[in-house]
Image (cartoon, rainbow, N blue to C red; front, top):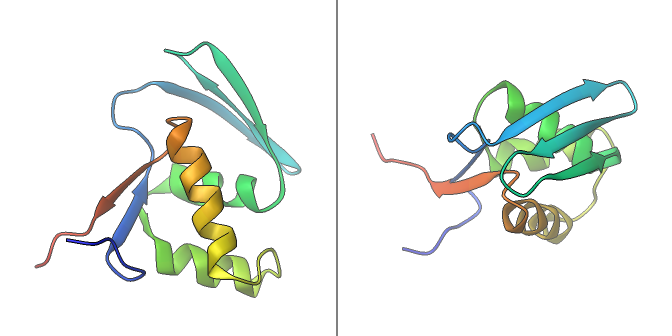
Length: 98
């Protein structure tokens, strides 16, 4: 099944591998297993902050960033999510049909 715009859920890793702190101008994320610390700002910090609260759909993230004027195109979010997934800062999974 291909992951499409409406059926993707974005969440933090469930393995407890991240420690983070969120400030008004960004957030610091420490990955326990890699030992790397990442400073996130702008749209990236907003995405991480939203996902740190609860799992969220890609569509909801895109709408939130559009409303805030942080991103204009979906491909910008796709690039950001792919980067964060490669760094193991987020997990992206298909939504379960209910």
